[in-house]
Length: 189
Length: 184
Image (cartoon, rainbow over all chains, first blue to last red; front, top):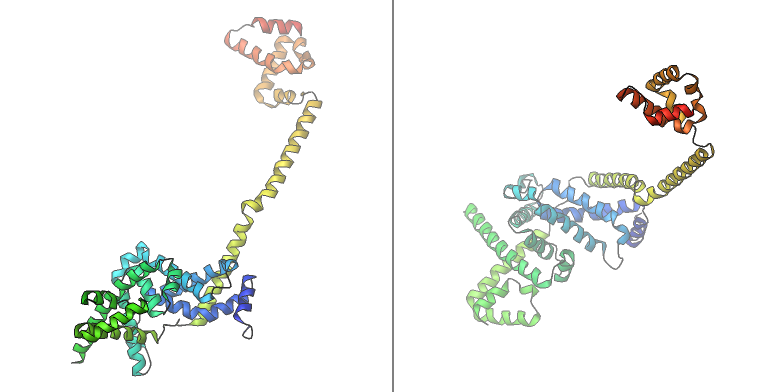
């Protein structure tokens, strides 16, 4: 399966080849999971969202248009699943209690990696205070590096709406990040 | 450019058209306060980029793959079950069953019509316990006349009921019953 191109594997998966689909899962699940984790900040929820995303992908494989990259399609599916999760009443209730579920002490790596990991976790944690739309726009544009058009396609949003949400998200995140650095400085001294 | 306009736009610097970006750059070269704001914004962007360099990965990728593939298998089983029960799949056998039922009903009525409809009354008069008892009573009352009733089976049941009602309510026979027994 490794020698085949992704286009061939996709064609086989469209035809119902489960083994071909498995190789797509193996290749893209890491990306889908990390995106879901940025939205949900919880390992279990991120795994559930990844599973649901691939089930949806499998169900709608027949409608896949080859001119679109599979990752673009996955962005759309994962984002929609995560937004549904964030908008659910159950999640709204527990939103105030959300914490990144693994302590930094559990991470093994060099100091540099630890700092990156800590900062990433801090940013993900800060992002939990944004509204679902602000969060989606911020994650896709600033964390995933998608263009405004790609974000618009993934979220079915107009450009002005993306920019408006992005503005509010960045202002809030910059404010929180400023406080984070201030706190860190105080702890160091 | 005014400082208020700069502050409003600096947040979306990367999303602005090139001309507007140039105007912002020009402004901050002449305004120390806005330059500081730009630097803060840059720090924020850098922090985000640093955070971007490490991604969260599933703790056990192969377990996640297996979990996803298992759920696909479940989905396929469910799809097969519901696929078989879909309207389109149920319709042909349903049509066949309706056609068979219609044909059997037509055959039954044709058979019934040809046999003159006698079969329906005779078993009715003897199968129920009450009818057998009444039959014996009437036979005792009307003797030979009552025993010859089988020659007119179509009228037998209504006559039987009429007789029964007359005896029960009046203790004697009505004119219709009297006429029928005389004819028989």
